[in-house]
Length: 389
Ligand SMILES: [Zn+2]
Image (tube, rainbow, N blue to C red):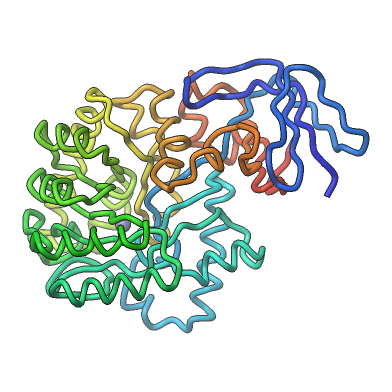
């Protein structure tokens, strides 16, 4: 493949939250080879003049469910695996067209989905998968049920043998389940066993949790990322800091659900839970942002609600600055995924996952909430996904 040079680019550095004008970015074999200030030359290169437009790294969504193409779990289970795969391929392509070039799947996707993307059979973001969500009997979600340390270790060993990047445990109730939202998922011994087992494979545990009590138990016992966490308080913030853990709010899911699906799909009890966690979630994000803990960009959408994946940018802008939201969706996402230097920033050696934005997202984060209009070029691994320049 001939090298590509993106000339006259204003490069967005999400680490510093700054724009660097007049750059030339050289792409070879799917990677960024060089970010130069002068006019880079290569005899056989394809040169694209960006005319000073903003060039930013591809986005990272740290909480998706790429295989949940329907929000009706019974329907999902009735699908033929071939039909389900076709639906997954559509979902992945749509994520890519929203500018997401890497996603962390938090329940459902497996090695088959990741491989189909790697081999170019599905056009989609690179997928970090964990396999099924692990929950205790009576627990929350579309899950593999495990009780006791032995069952947990066995399930995690099985997932690790299939190449899982992480393990997801439900350590509290949820919105859709019948389990109380303040109910606690696993015992201390079980959580510690899961964390130990994941560590043996040099992987980590992500915990689905809402209340401060559930979040704090998980953090104390070594869970590395907290998913949702809508009801955290100051005591949780301290533990995030002490344990260098990550917070992955998923506001879009609550807002999209409340607006579209919930009124007819959920029971009155689940609906009340939903409104409560939705409103508390914004306050929790504000608290975490002020405290400076590391925050990932998550969305947690199911079925047709996937269309709202970019709404998270708008929702977070109520309490966060654009630069901080951009950092969540790029470099912090890379830290969570263990892919620093490979994704989430425009540096030599990184995958050429790049977006050209019609405007400056550091001033107007709403641009990323409207990707169809504002993303002029989308590149993943040096290949063009969209190019309207
Ligand atoms: Zn989820």
